[in-house]
Each structure stands twice: as structure tokens, then as C-alpha cells.
Image (cartoon, rainbow, N blue to C red; front, side, top):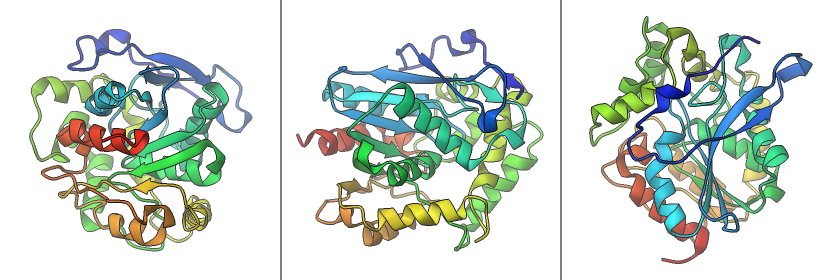
Length: 306
């Protein structure tokens, strides 16, 4: 597997993101020989605090959670915010074929459980962070205490994705130069400074480093016989029996995943009896539009303290 590792100087002077990264190695897939993949993650907050696993999606990285992390750390929560393989400071396979849904689930599982041995975890997943995280929780329920699903879902390919998603997929796949920061900005409603947009571009200084962002939309199951469909159906079978607390703080302006909120609340028993806040004036990337607000919502959910 040919890899790209973003130079450290790309990440100098990131706005509102003071944390130094930690690194762990995860194995190459299918018994391949060679140097293991290096995954980056932020480990912030008290070591003995309750643990929140913050999983980002396409095409962002842990920088997306900076304001959420601030609020959680102030509430005494330990935050683990990985960069998915192919994103952020993590190693980036250069071939799109090196990315599969199953591999991304396994890489995060290996980091969270084999390397960090996280227990009693509150999952916070948005976009692909939910697609990966909900699979992890369903397949490893003993590791999780609570779940926060924000602007995400768990598609099986049995229902058509919305037209706006198909447009995004086509734009990402066909862009001669993929402007990651611009795509993130397009999923926000409150605007974005040049410095923040550049921070989303920072992991990808050369075009060949963008295989992850380019391929992830095509890995979303969109037909019933997709390679990931059976595993996601099995995960749904577990989630429809999930009694642990399950919160769905969706935003009010996300045309991509908005329809998933009522479905999750209807099908997952752990959603019942909870007040599910709507994050107003926020788009698909609600962590960027309303990170501090989302952080306070998650902190109250994790700690039980208003």
C-alpha cells in the first residue's frame, strides 16, 4: 500500500486548535506486509474523566471538533478525536481501492479498543463518523455507554440517497482539483473565515493525497447488494434493540441527513424519554456552525450535569 504522510508544517498556526496530536499504528488490511498505517488522534481532558469518542466524516478531520472539545474538556470529559485514515494527520493511502467501509470500521476499532482500550465510551458521530461509529457500537456494545448521532445515519442501500447527496458525490469524483475547504464551507450556513477554510485544506497539500475524500461518497451503500449492506443491516438489528441512552441532536439546515433524525428516534429504543435538541442556524457540519452549543449538549448528556 502506497501512503502519503502530510508534512507537519502544514498544520502550523491552526486557529483554535492548540492540542498536540498523538499517534498509534494500525495494521494493514488483509495481511499485507509493509509499514503499518499511522493514525493520529487528539487526547484532551482529564485522563480519568468519562470518555467521548468524536468521529468526523467526509471530507473533514478532527479540527472540526475543536469547539466541541473545548466545551467537553471544561465539563471534565476526556475527548478522543481521531483522524480517519486518509484524513487529517493520519496516513493517506494513495489508491482509492485501498479504502473500503469495512477497513475504516476496523481501523477505528483497532485504534479505540486495541491501542487505547477505551471503555464506557460515549460515541459522538457525524456524517461518516456515524456510519463508522454506529457500526462499531452495534458490533461492540460492551464498550459503549451512550451514543450521540448528529447529522448522520446508517444506510443499507435499500433506500435511495437524496438528490443533493448524488450531486455532492458527482462533484467530488469529477473535480479536477478537489477544494476540500470549499466543500466544507458549502455545508455550513454561518460562513467561514479564510483561516478556517485553509485548516480544512491543510491535510491535502498535493492532489494525490486526496484519495480518501474522493472515494468516501462512493463507499456509502446505495444499492441493496452493496458490499457493506449486510453488515449495516446486522448493525440495525442490534440498534433496534439498543436500550442505552441514544441522543440525536440534528441541525435544522441539513438536507443530506435531516430525514434520518425521526427514523433513529422511532427505531432505537434508547432515544425514548430523552429530549432531542435541534441545533438551529446550522448546516451539515454543525460542529463548525455551532460547535460550542453542540459541545454543551454532549457534555450534559455525558455527565448528566446541566
